[in-house]
Image 1 (spheres, rainbow, N blue to C red):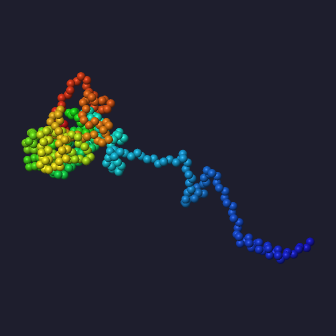
Image 2: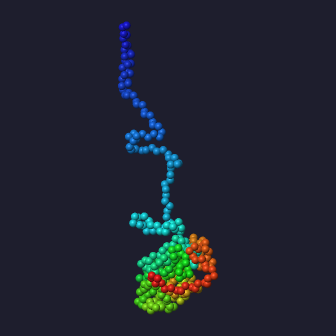
Image 3: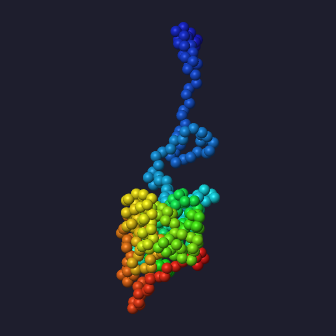
Length: 337
């Protein structure tokens, strides 16, 4: 059959359709399908950089950061060569310093050791220079105060307590870290400070037995007592010293115009012990129970026969049927003895 001619209208429509298709460009590609949950593709398919989407972690996987417990201030010492703090007495890290029991039947927990320094000298070596930190710092501050006023003045310190307190040979007290024996300040014939290594007995007129070239110095020893009774960080309870020397110090304080409340405080603190030798060769200073430690700290001495074994570990148990021990003899401490 002969072909029918295409109309002009139909031909124009075909041309317009071809032109529209060429202008629209290639058809859009079909988006790739998303991977299944939990599937991780090869490393080449993962982006190298850019923000990374993370889901909300589950409660089981979210762990808080681990924190180390802080150390108490008393346990941190001087830094080591590596810069890390050095701790002391690991067993006492969780226990603050404490005086348990009385001065005559007690023990010491977490004490500090007194160290010799430019203005402080220890009468003898050994493990008898431990006490409550307030007592140790009191002695250090007082020594610096006297040395700042009098050139060459050096404080001689004898026994405090053992590292854990308890009975200390030659003493009725010194068991709970609150007592310290301190030597007197002396001057020579020219008024210069004399540095000594032992205690010396002093007569009521200020002369020294066995050392005629020395004298008991009222000014230096009053400055020491004044530093003790006015210290803002430690409360001094007693200063045992012989009655004649107490009178000399109070008389000197009145002559130099010392503040009246300070003189009254010193007069109350200084006393000659009633049941012991007169303390005419050294001071015996005792601080009061620190604030907050009154629960187990006993301010005044307790007779040993009344001491409770469960309250005072480290103090000897009373002997049954034994006679009462005589008071210890006054001792002259020599280095090395």
